[in-house]
Length: 74
Image 1 (cartoon, rainbow, N blue to C red):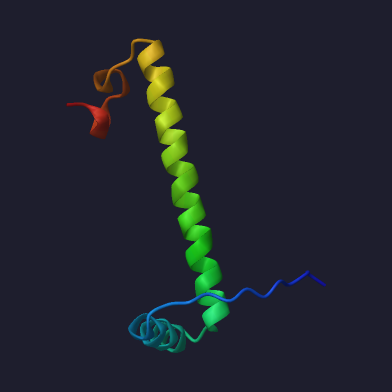
Image 2 (cartoon, rainbow, N blue to C red):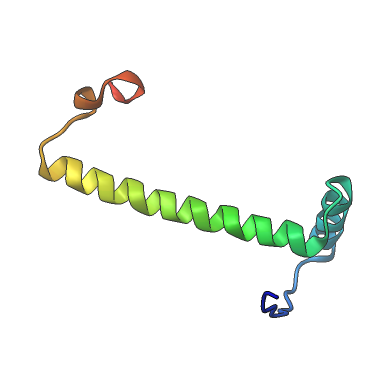
């Protein structure tokens, strides 16, 4: 069995209503919805960090968008 930790957060009343409405529409619990939101936030943050590192490496190697072709070309 997975270990579960309960945390409490404060949100404006209107946001609370929106969260509950969306969870109901998606037939999920509020906890499931917020866990998924956090996973997506974390994935986006990791992706942005990867892009930043990629730009640094590309710059060190003297690469330009034209070197990658496709949608990266100017």
